[in-house]
Length: 334
Image 1 (cartoon, one colour):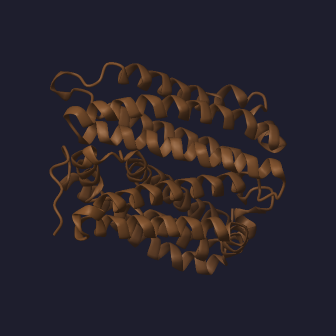
Image 2 (tube, rainbow, N blue to C red):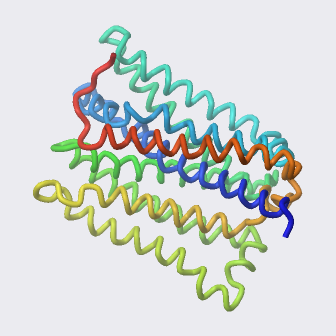
């Protein structure tokens, strides 16, 4: 096979990896923002929650920049189509991210009386970002149709992504906090996990119905005997995590990390199902990765840079999580 064939596959793989890592890493810190309790008496808990994501949240967004950058330079035709249809929700998402960034800094620098207002801004920005991302995902899956059913599916997707981020955010807090906040995070995780399961189940039912091609791919015999392991494992992870959460917290904080690991597994399985549903289309129903790809000569040069940049990002991400491992400490601004 030609270089053009394999280069397109390599770059869609890199873009997929970037999107998945972003969904996991920025997903939990967006989820923590969504879960911030707003009562004045909860200020200490809000500080601990912010401290748990403080060293990571800004760097987590690097993966979103990387994913968009790869699409721009490796699949420019797809980049034009996607942004043409998603211009408004992308703008809304960026507003939400700006709100989070401003609120994170100003909550410590503004007058004490205004701290709660900035916490509310951080929460609102997190919620706005997740709803926009879910809505964009829904429109993407529907091939950017303008029908009412497509927009209703996008709204369902927006709610589902918000619940998923809340789920992984609660699991992160179980791992990173102690005491009453940890018990509260367990309650959040149980509720958001059950609602997220309903959302995933709804998408699994609706998506094949509105996309006949997806239905044919998933239920093509004998492949169906293997690919249905993906939703089966996903639902098993939901069930096992729900049973585990009923037993947490345990003595000596045992297994506090396991809910987060299980939610990460759910994210990976859901992403794998999405990739299987639409590969090799980079724009569902409109454009394959080979139709959208840049010239092979350009991709070859870009690949050299990617082989340097991606490992560096992975290395400093792993290093930062290693340095700030363990329970969240008291919040300090420097």
